Structure formats: C-alpha cells, structure tokens
Image (cartoon, rainbow, N blue to C red; front, top):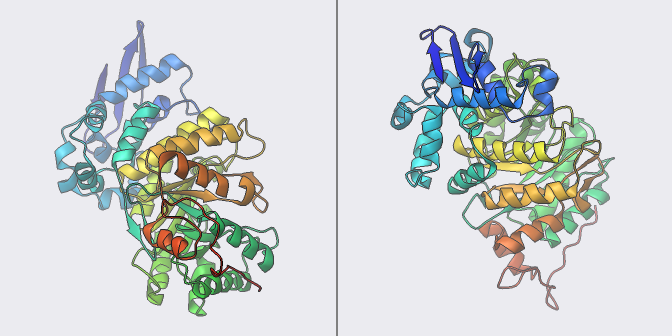
Length: 467
C-alpha cells in the first residue's frame, strides 16, 4: 500500500494492491468514497466502490493516509465552498497537535486504546476536521463506533441539561397533519405521561406560515408555563420564519434549521452561514434560557438530492454538516438517519450503519448528538431494525431520540420511535431523563423513587389543556 501527495495545494494519488491487483484512487474524495461501506446513495451518485475487493483496497490505502493530508487537500474546493472555508479557517492547530503525526489507521488504533479517555477526546475534538472523523469511521466496525462514542459525552443546557452520563433524553414530537391545537396538545400530554419531552417539545408544522408557527409556539409555551415544566420548545419552521417570530415577540426558545455539508446544499435549504448566525443572534436576544439556542437536523443524502455533492460520498458530506453545526454551539443536533428514503439508505442494515456513523462522527467533533431512528414506508426496513439501532445508540451514549405517538408520524408520514420505545430503552439500560425534568416528573407523581412510571397519587395535580 502507498500514497503519494502532490504538495500543500496539489492533488493526491493513492494506491494499494490486493490479491495481485493494483487499485489507484486519484484523490482524497475518491479514496473516501471507495472506502465507504456499501449504500445506495453512493451507488446512485456513481462514487461507490465497484466491488468489495475495491472497497477493501481503498480502506488499506486510507489507513496509511496521514491525518494532516486532510488539511492539505479539500474534498470540496476551498474557493467554491464556504463550508470548506469554515472548516479549514477555524481549524484549531494546537488541539490537533497530539494527533498530527498519526495516520488514519493509527488514529483508529489510538481511539480504541485506553489513552482515548473522555478528557482526551474532548480536548482533541476542536482539532479534528469532519473529513478526519469520516475517514476513521470508514475503518471501524459497528462495535468500534459504539465503544468510542460511549466515552465521549457532550453536555448542553437550556432549561434542562442534556448529555449527562446515565441519562437519555427524548424530543417529544407532537406533529399533527393540520396543526390542530387539540391534537397537538393531546400528543404532548401523551408524551409527558411517558416521561418524554426533556430534550425539547419540537413540532414540525404542517405549513410554514408565520401565524401558524407563532400559534404553535404560544400553545407549547402556555403548557410549559402552566405546569412549570423544565423543558424547551421549538417549532421546526424555516429559520427565516423563526427570525420573523422573534421580531414579533413570540416565545422562541430554540431556532431550528436543516443543514448540510456543502454551500450548494445549504442554499437548497434556503440558508447560508450568515443567516444561521443571524438566527442564533435573534434567539439569544430573547434571553429565555441558556446560550445554546440552536437546533439542527441533518441526514445522509441531502447534498446529493440537491445536486450539490461535488462527487463526495454522502457520509463524508454528512460529517461536514456537523462542521457547520459546531460553529454555532447548538443545544441539539440530530441525524434523521432514514428519512430521505431507500434511494440513499436502502435497507435496515444500511440505516443501522449510517446511524452509528453519524452519532460517532458528531460526538467526535464535539456535538450533542441525537438520532431520529427512522425509516420511510417504502424502505426495506421495519421496526425490528429500528429497535436494533435504538438499542445500539443508547449503548453508545446518544444524547436524545424521538418520541412520536405510536412511532408513526401522521404528518410527515414516516416511521420513527415511540414514547413506549423510549420507555423500553431507558428501562433495559437503567437510563433516566434529564435531572431537572426527572425532578418535575417526581413532583407530579408521574415517576416513583426508582424512576419508574407511577400512577399519580390521589390529589396530585393532573395535566389538562383546553385550547
């Protein structure tokens, strides 16, 4: 195996031999794509390895690439892409110094060693680029991704504290196909009774009207204040809608935006880095909680669907989206891992792998990662696959997952995880909600001293909401 680099601004050529055949990869982005575990999106884009032999050869070559090569050669051109400029211009060289002499393979070995403690991983994170994280993930088995991510805890705080050891938080997702207040409120009540909602009560609105978003924000804020619930709300409208809501004095806790790993893909979402900064500043101006006021969602395949992938594999681009998120110190980030469809992640095996990759890369880069463990109805996947991924992610220390009534989102028309699923995984792994939310549940008589769901004692206040 060998690699050849053409200098600080030059292109690379990578080669390896396997079973007497020599494989050549023209540049870093080609090498990364060929080394990626098989998935339908990369095949659709024409960047996947042509055979398992080529994939193994690419991994051999990738293992010998110095981590510093990713600082020398951008997979998306620096002059054409503001995400690349963000990644390289904000790179922390001093944080990177302990790993500067490592190859990708050597980095994998170090990550799996006892030297990679929670403290050393946290210190190294600012020195890692998304491409470095993506590269090492391609050399790792599922258990490797789980083992390393489990050590890396990322804590954030608004009204609740997310990411503490022994805790698993849940986004209560009370979507409704017409944004009917009674339907939304009923789903909120249902989720709260199962101990869900400590990450956020987050609603995907059926439309993107400003009036509709403000009505939903006021509905959730009224429930929160009426019962002194220590949580935060978010209406997952477009960022421009949230900014306008802030300007009209609406109770905006967190601002939301879907983001991607290239400038062109973000433009497809109607945003750029300047607008993301404007949205964060708008939320901070209200001073409703902490300093971490952003909620970002991502998903493998978004850049390809926008025609803005630059020939880069979808998992590397997903990691670059985390580079965008990192710049804005978010409260929550999650990969909606199977939402885009089987064109990008074909079946349960691909979805499980992608979910573990996304969580690992996000945590390695210092993000408070959650995952929407989900699939579309036309994917070759079912709830058994989602049970598997949910359990693996909880073992890996995921910060939060989704809580959807019955696991069936009737507005977005996809399958996610239910309130019951969150109850299951907390129970089997001994995980508890965020401490502030747990204390509230106990005060309402909704959990017992051991943290298990309990029937409210006689005379305890009951949740009721009549819009």
